[in-house]
Image 1 (cartoon, helix red, strand yellow):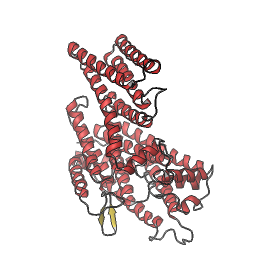
Image 2 (tube, helix red, strand yellow; image 1 turned 120 degrees about the vertical axis):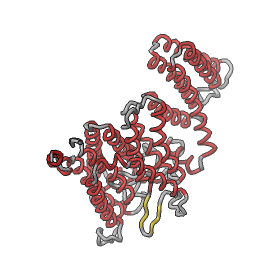
Image 3 (cartoon, helix red, strand yellow; image 1 turned 135 degrees about the vertical axis):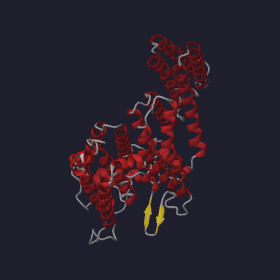
Image 4 (spheres, one colour; image 1 turned 180 degrees about the vertical axis):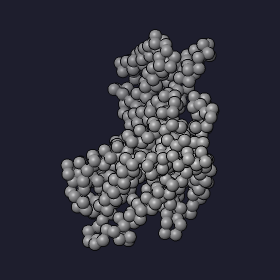
Length: 491
């Protein structure tokens, strides 16, 4: 009898729900449908609600998403914890099967065609991966600072990535890198995140300026700068992780002095490739760090040496990959992004037309269904990957800013919900959801504005299609259900 009384005193799911987040979700769905309407509308259409149109079909996707969200809220919150690994295994199996899918759409085998219905398992694998990682990290005894535990968490993230790459859907695979933001929040060493950022810098600077010569020497500016950064980063890490300020300054000054002397010699005496001297300096640095690590038994020296070797290996392997392994059209996309090629009629066409559409919107936009660039179909994929250009053209700067503020409100709300979770499972899952939304928002909007690579990922709740909308809804509503149970008293 006492347990029954306790159960009666438990707050209901609907009362415990975060209605602010649901309100933001509904607002995004509404603005998303308006945008799909504007992007897919053609002059002369008489019924935008017809199921024969994209805007009409999007109503079906929105309706089914609302039903799906309600079902997820009605399930017991412990269901997601209990069956996390089972859900993950089933989605992995589905991803693996999809690799051998005979249906190829736009060069990708990531879609399962079931009669008139097309589903993309990669969109659903995000919530399954988030549940599995949250389950693992909430297990008793899990310590992210232990290499074995961190490697296991990374394996759960990287495994679906490999299967999705096997489906030739690189863009969707890259989304899983967003989970590393959650790992950092949960205590992953900052050096790992810094290493990732450093690799991006090496690639962009090295590739972009590889064919630019330094002053009047036969030295590649890109390679020179990358190797100089490796030297400086190595010195800085000695100071940060080994707490050896004087040694770090000495190592940095010696490396920089040798490089400067070699550059001056090449400039005024005998021209030669200074990169060879830099490689020798880096090799000496690595040897010195290994010696210090073995003699002092301080493992940080060995890790910094590994960072230096890995940095150089990554840069040269990335350069080889770009020039000798990548397909020509993939190379062109990278070159367009880095500003090496303009190619307004080819790889850069989408972005160029998207920028024109957004710019033509001005401050207040051209009004609903009045966009010219989108109505005349100048922007490819304008109701899916490039949906934000429709917002910019029809709603202008004010409308675009309003949409971004709405997404910002969602991001801030998710941070608030994640931080108030009483158990680690809910917090980890919440930050996984946050990371996925943040990655999609940053890359998609940046892609439309020409700031990030064109990798073909949807804008949450805006891009046309059922798979992405259902996937984002599942991600969000599972978290809302977990959050609604935060105050429950477990017997």
